[in-house]
Image (cartoon, rainbow, N blue to C red; front, side, top):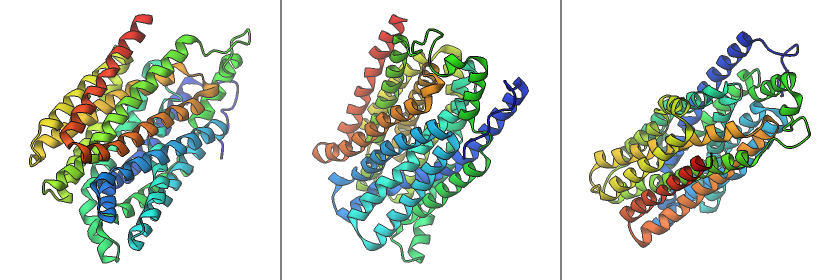
Length: 422
């Protein structure tokens, strides 16, 4: 399934530009599909667990499970991509997510919580793959355009991400006509969307961006492509390692805060009398804010630097936490605004953090390192999802939101310290 390297010693600039445009088109199409799969499951996962288990304190378990599953999938997708290319890695991840969706439906029909938890773990592969696809967009991009290439892939998730939650009610009705519990309905959409995304990548992601990037790098400088200098020393300097740590920290903290608040917002709304349609609308707005600003965020990161956008992430998440904590439970508008800010802060963190990682990791280890970084992101999401339900049961949703906002401020000293060292 690996791509054929470009003929000759190098590819011409027009050929490279044409390949990059084709790759971005295919990634955009797959992200539209996978965005619907991701968003549909997020909308009702907590509600499905609450309904089956009869406990709010365990409502965060679904989010924790599929983010924990995404951690394992991130390792697998990263290693497959490193060894064989982006196409087989991403395709495997999406097919696994589709399998998990089918398992959730089976668990709901059988009313089996154990099967539900296992299936949600497997379903997390779709989440990991959705995130890993952003790296593929930057493999062939020029250094000064990497953030924009990442953002192009991310923004494609918006269409599916906004449509998915708003299809929660119709897919629930469809599920009932098929004899499936209505809360499992969105997972029908998830399974179909992930399977179609996998098929699109398997057929059309040619040339493979990572394979082509390596071939081009080797034709220009074999030692650098292998991750070594002419003297045989590793390219990964202390500054490079510092960049990886900072990029990972930015994405880990934003993921932790985002998942914790997002997971419990539908439960908080349900407890205040709102239905699935209202919570689906709020989550749709949130996911739109997670991805829709990506082109602007990418341009800002390329134009003004990754550090400034990373700092903006912390400030935006703080504003989101304060607003979510102070919004009345019956105000859909204020909760929607809070979740929009939550998504925007996450977007700032993901785009800037991804660009930092891509800038500092050599091609010889790029996919593997990116996979390991995404493991940390997934574990942060799992922690946020699990802790969110426990914290809300012990305290309240406003306490959770405010804590998350304050925690995000840890990004500011980290960014300042890195900027000072440079």
